[in-house]
Image (cartoon, rainbow, N blue to C red; front, side, top):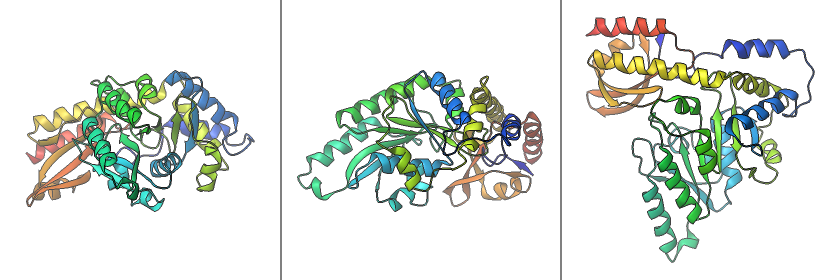
Length: 345
């Protein structure tokens, strides 16, 4: 069975396995104060160009989102998100379970519109009864979005301007950040993120690591005692080295960038292949996720040989599905998929 279901269906890059094996018997202090975490943080600071950045390693994306949002919000505040945002649609109410409401706004191919965010905030504070309501305390976005789309530098700058005017933070979910930065159509860099975002995270789980995300406060602006908050929420690994070794490896000799490039190169070939075989796109993206519309019987037939993700119903007889390439997608998988697509035409 060929798998184009997601970008975390394989384990991790061989160099990470080798690094874990090589360092396995080396005794290290715990809780992220080991030499591997220290080295990884230094390499990330160098990569993003921020010597004073505060960095915290966490296991997974939902955990990172929940903890960061909780740490940045007062107990009477909620977080603005696109309706399709991961925290609103696919995190099982994790944010609400922490006591904070997700305040959803319209999604434009997965993205928030800065003008609509401004209008929402303006309308909120124009209501004389706003003190009885959930305060909009921050803005959440993901890059890439759930639909594989990317924010431009201008869009991020516009969102930051709104957030600055209302003195609330902009937080960017970077679960697939490696693929966003590798996109040939993007003008967003680490420098852009450091200039526009109060906080963001660099995804490892979906970009070559066994697990792990690197939460970055680029300007040394982490909430007070965040380390303690991480432990209080059960998110602190005693063997923090497990994450440190992985990120130290990812940020050695450009490996993280290399893995992002592989997914994008394979996605470009996938997009061309789907196009040439007459598949109807729901959304062509600049990243590793491609969305096509399949007739339901066609979907059943193709699923016998290829795994991909259900995304949404298009109509009674058609379904939107997602094909995803990844850091580990080989040319041989695309060769095999091309043959299947041609045979089914």
